[in-house]
Length: 119
Image 1 (cartoon, rainbow, N blue to C red):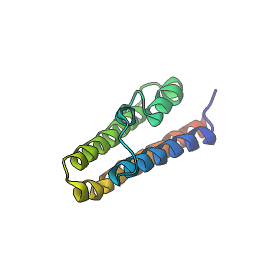
Image 2 (image 1 turned 135 degrees about the vertical axis):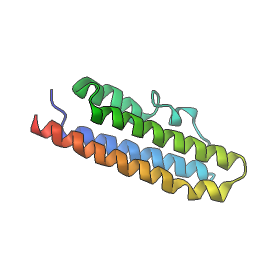
Image 3 (image 1 turned 90 degrees about the horizontal axis):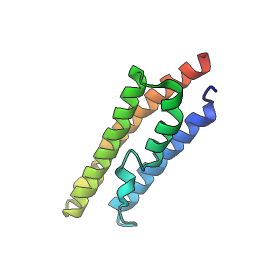
């Protein structure tokens, strides 16, 4: 079964959800849930394993996407660590780092989506 644009839209939503939850932590609205930074437990990581991995396996694009997701999660976790150490403004400013990873993930999702549409 080929992936549809809806499948990729779900990934985009999960990525926005991650960034929103991270922002909520850095602005003191909520506590950090440890599963937020675990590729295995994070909704975007779960989507990757359940949707992308079975369809595409371990291609260069999927390996890069998996790495980009992990780097985004790691960057978020580092920001929360900064926030907990009292480096609140620095942590908030670091959200730009997460956006860089998110933009890379978006490019990779677009590549996969084009590949799925061509198949």
